[in-house]
Image (tube, rainbow, N blue to C red; front, side, top):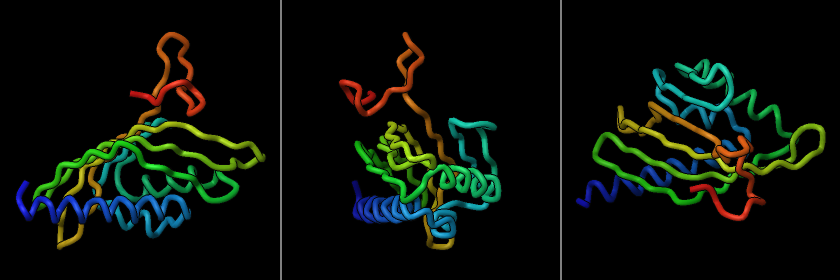
Amino acid sequence: MSMADRASASEIRAFLARRADAQQEKDIDGLMSCYAPDAVYYDVVPPLRFAGTAAIRGNFLRWFDGYAGPIGLETHDLTLVAGDDTAFAHMLHLDSGERKGGHQRAIWVRESVCLRRTGGAWRITHEHVSIPIDPATMRIWLPSDKDQPA
């Protein structure tokens, strides 16, 4: 890995940490500053594909609104490939917190992101999240299950 690639990887790790902080704090403006205007976001909830920052913003506000307080978000198994102007990352998240109505929730989420540097700043251009399930039971894989999702 070249010095430039290592510098880009370091920048991306810091960028993803700032994005996670914004998600946990439900800071919509901080979170949306991470996305390119033409970003596409594939989610597990309908309509499944959100194109452009207005649609992505609405989806995140809906997600935030489901929590009574801050959102717990632990990142695991981050893998990153970064060049001068493009980067790709995939990871697992443990998404947790108190949902409105008082119940606690914890769920594994898989995430892949594609980033592009424009005007000197990294922005997410494509994101895809999914929830692992047990195909035999069609049950969501929960943190209480024996193993982490693969």
